[in-house]
Length: 254
Length: 293
Image 1: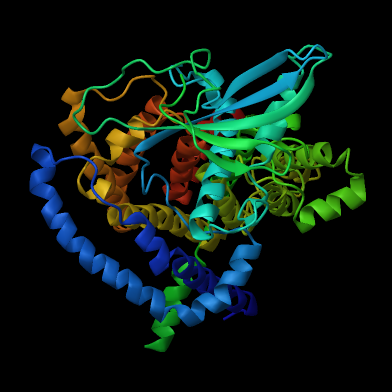
Image 2 (image 1 turned 180 degrees about the vertical axis):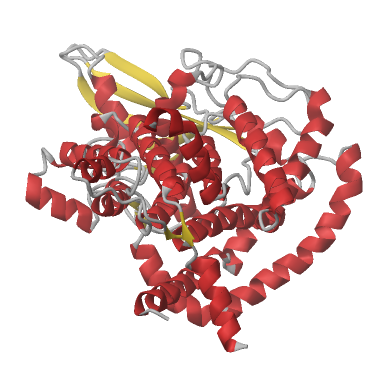
């Protein structure tokens, strides 16, 4: 057997083992996807779900055992795979959210005569909730992903370590949420009168449960203009290092 | 016995194949890389330090800043990524530029991971498999240049990078299927209802109507079964076609109903790897014969 084939064979074996090992979820990750039911059964799921639930108990046990058994190979294969960026976490829509999230950035400024000047912008979804997303929405999708990744990473950090500093490291980098008010705040500042002095930049998060399966919806939602920013609708979640605040609002913005 | 096993291993992983399928994958994945970059083409938003990105924190930032300066660095990284994919697509210095495209994608990931989704990760993993193959023997500037010098080289190449590519595609479906199976909303058939209600992704601004409930439940179960069974279905030719045709239907439907960037295109493009490389080559010869005569 040529030496080249031996080397290639060794690499093939390594890759197969590494990819398979890295694809097995940890017990903590598994626990994060096993949520509670949100919708009642319909006629189809009433027949199928009990069987799938019964099988799931076995697959969960098997996955936990596989995780334990692969502890040693994982220690070897993780570093090179991570360095090469070859993650094997294929969780696309594995746990579809039951809540729609929207975000807005608002800049509050003051003019020399003391009168206030404000400007606000919906930043998630960039095109608004009621927009048809044609081919031109392609690039806006990437901006939406950036904003949603930032808020997800920040929320997970807060859930995991409630006392972690605001600029703690996430898998997307440190102080991951700060870029949203900074970037959109700078854009909004250009729309304010030239003599206005920015007092603060706020980041607002809207959240509303999706309609359950079989329920009717598509009711009216408040637009940005209708939102009473000054009212105590939301809960202040965080004071940012650059003077911005994150507030929750409900329901989401149009 | 052991000799027989070695022979089986050899024929499975090192069988010579015609190089055309690798060329097709190189071109298609080069174009898809450019399509991904088009999505993040806004320099100020996705590449500049005051854009939608975490503060500089990786070695990629340090290196590029040191070489190009902090002001020019975002533009340098973006242009380097574009150049790598263009060179890969055209097949210029292919043995270097395909690994270079992989390195560029890696640099993009280290530069700003925030706007990147599963589409990027899939593309990156498949690009890694392509970087291991000889993708420039045909349909490349390299091949044209060699032909001009009278040194054309369309010798067969080895199959193992293609097999790893197929394995990676199967792994993606199998793993995502098993992840989904753990979630109660996939098991109770309501998952697609919530996916289509998601205002971030849905293309049409309407929630699924109540009358579509059972239809979506069936679609949820079909998706789940197809993803979990995909690695098995592709092992046998008749079921492989079923898996791939079903995949095209699924991804086309997703593309129509949801804005997911290039994800559906990347997945459907990966199906090209399941074609028989020698059949692709003979088809190409038949089609191009009139021009070559």
